[in-house]
Image (cartoon, rainbow, N blue to C red):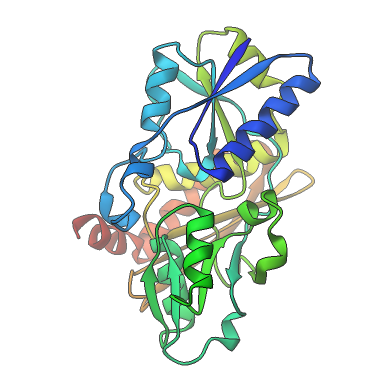
Length: 300
């Protein structure tokens, strides 16, 4: 029986159970092992200030390398662009909605000076660029915790990934979906990553059967862009790739944390050149002033 490693949050377990069901459909038995990560334990500090890459993945990857689990299921947006030696991502399953969602009330309805909660520096920076009048505050915790804080009246609205709300069946709570032109999503948002050892073993062989080629192409471009810009998950950077036939379109933004400067660029290329497209667009952003913004963030 294959052992799937997962975080213990409701959303993480939904994702792990979804993978377990896909494996069952292939005639493969598996069970889930819950692993607590640094990101789960440090809940009182904004993510951007914790400063560790792999906040939600390190302990799970250690379990993979120790061979106590066979596969790990992550949200791809939590994955650093460089994996530990000996580990690979043989499957990026079909992607959910990659966009950001506003819960509580639509952006236009939030009053001047209204409080909006988010755990993401990327969302906070883009929101400040759109609505500099709002009081943007950090909100940590899993989805249920954040929704409870909203319901208690601590915020007028909160920003979350649409994918998580849809996966848990809570899409009715979404007040507004923000287009990538309004708020560029996180790299890999809405996509799952199945990580295994690079040993060609049973876990690796099983995972390869769950890969979605179109999703992999899009996130390859996004992750190549992130990698070329430093590889951190908690920077005010968004990237969103789409496919039309064999043509890929990639847009990306880098924003100062206060939202005062927003640099947006886009490019297109062949699907088979996804990584090159991402790297090239990263260079365009860096040349346009993103280098200074990232230095400001990393130096903070």
